[in-house]
Each structure stands twice: as C-alpha cells, then as structure tokens.
Image 1 (cartoon, rainbow, N blue to C red):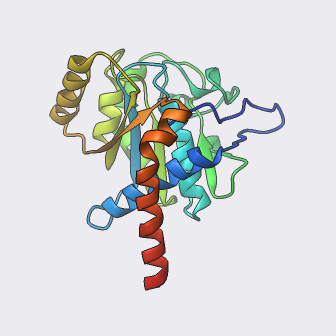
Image 2 (cartoon, helix red, strand yellow):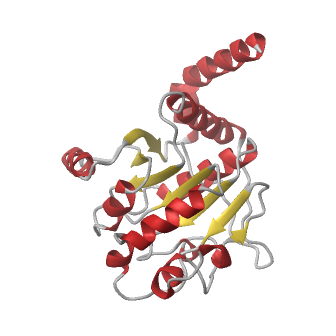
Length: 241
C-alpha cells in the first residue's frame, strides 16, 4: 500500500482526497477484512498505530476513515497525536480540538469539523497543552470516546508513534481494536516484536496489520491475487443477494 495519494490542503477546504484505482481497491480490501472480523466482534472505535514515525500511519488512518464514509457509515477521524498533530503533516491548523476539550473539560461537538467527504467528520488535535499523556490516559478521554461512539458508526483514531511516547498504548487500550502499520522492508524485527508484546500487555485487541509504502509496481506484481480473491468474494455476495 502506498500513501502518496492524499493531496495537500487547499486553504478553503479541510480535506481533499484523490485515490489511484489500485490504492482505492486496497482500502476497500482492508475495510472488507474489518467487516468480516466484525461479524463476531463489532468494532466502533479503531486506532491505527505504528512503531515509528514516517511509516504512513496517518495516511492509512485517514483513508480508512474515507473508505468507511464512502460506504455510507457515519465516520469520525480523530487526531490524537498531541505530540505531532496532523495539521503539521497535511491538514492545516485548528485552534480547537482534542487537547483543548480535554484541558477545558468542554463538549467535543464544538470542536468537530466537517470534511469534504460525505459522512466524514474530523476532530483535530487542537493547540498544544501540558500533560498530554496524563490527559489521554484519563477517564475524561474514555468518556469522550464513549459519547462520540453513540453518534458515529466508526471512529478512526490516529495515534502517536509507539517508539516515542506511551500515549499510543494508552489510547489503543481504550479502543475496540488496533491496526498496526508497518513500513515495507522495515528492518528492525525485534522492535516490532517488542511493540506487539507491549500492546498485548496493555490488553489491546490487535485486529491486524497493514504493510505500507510498497512500491506500486511491486504491489501490482505480488498482491494482485488478493484483489482477485476479493473480487470473487464481492461477486459471490452480489449473486447471493
């Protein structure tokens, strides 16, 4: 999976997404696998985690949220990376957001923005405040997730890199499931193994992993068979319906 398909922000708009066909299908495949998992284990809140920065975690989280929204589910994308907010990456600034509503004990509805994608909303990080780790591990953050879960079909949460701070583990432990993003040819197997062990120690429900930043020609050559299988599944479901 590659993450070069999200355009930068137009000052007049919050989000703009342009998918290549293969990338769009890859996210449909990911969303489909999550839907299969949900037949026995419903998932309302899903966090996306990675060991290090620059593995494409934010792109995966954003576009997974778009994929759910595109299939008609009311979806909220939450930027919980208080150490490096999404606006520093691609979305633009927002004065009010998760950090500020935690700090001021405010209602989250006032900080939620509409995205340019139908059915998709966005809760930005907000301005930096002190003691971010303590706030994210607090009962207040859990209460916010519970409240938002009553209003949205899916909540997709972008988290801080797990190698830098404990925040990501705290957040993941409060969600229904976590998806691990791994950069293609990531060389440090032992660090990944330790990360998975730490997630399990935090009682995180790991629902799967995404291999990211695969060159497009390599992706098409090695992974087309998975898309063929997915197309067969969709045809069978259509015929059965």
